[in-house]
Image 1 (spheres, rainbow, N blue to C red):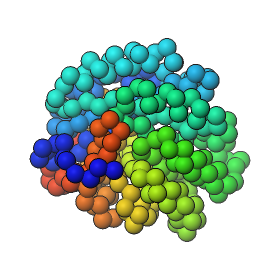
Image 2: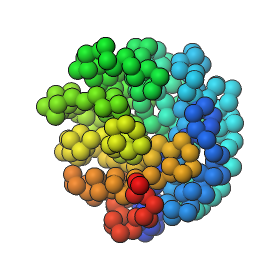
Image 3: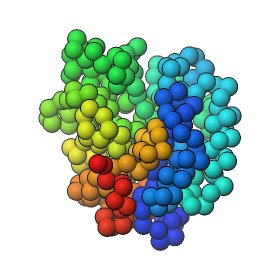
Image 4: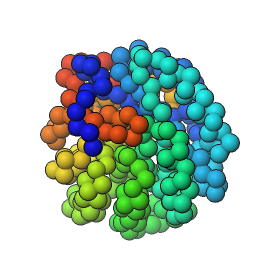
Length: 288
């Protein structure tokens, strides 16, 4: 990990590293509108990280088709000419059984600035899908979390990803572990993340979901800080109005557990910049 060379040249605001496009089939607005929203909030940088295509047909309802990827490149290239804010080219790639062979060959060829790694399925169950949330009533919550963290461990050890997205996503509908059980489940994964030199994101999308909480929780974030795991910030925006959403709260959370820097990406290489002062954060970055 490169620790020097602040690419922002003194600018003290947070980049938004998790933004989708309509190609994922569940977002709205075009890339020009996302760029305009970020510019209005004076964000220095954004990264488009739409859901990667999966030629094996995995979760087709929530991602671009393989033949649409070049369209994704085109629409992000178009706005990448902007210097205010700078636009990075990224992807959110799911980890699931059988994904490694394809991603190992495909990801390095695309010229991404950042690859987010995420888990949305336990077996065939889309545990964060509102249409499948009823299954939480019939599962052992502790077992579900155990299975989720096992998949997350495999994601990390694969070495395919730069940053783990929304690390405690299964809490989306309010299904939690006790602090003791969560620490016991999360610490081995955090040890792996630290060992791989990966980052995690503070994902403010959870503030817009039933859980009404940033991913990850303060507990997990404090455990990450103890391991010197770097963080970035992502709104998980699925519409232009969600760009930068809740970043004031995310900044406060990061500072509360001892973070003073965040990571930024270039061509899948990490560097660190200071966190901005809280009074530099645009008021619209606070959730309403």
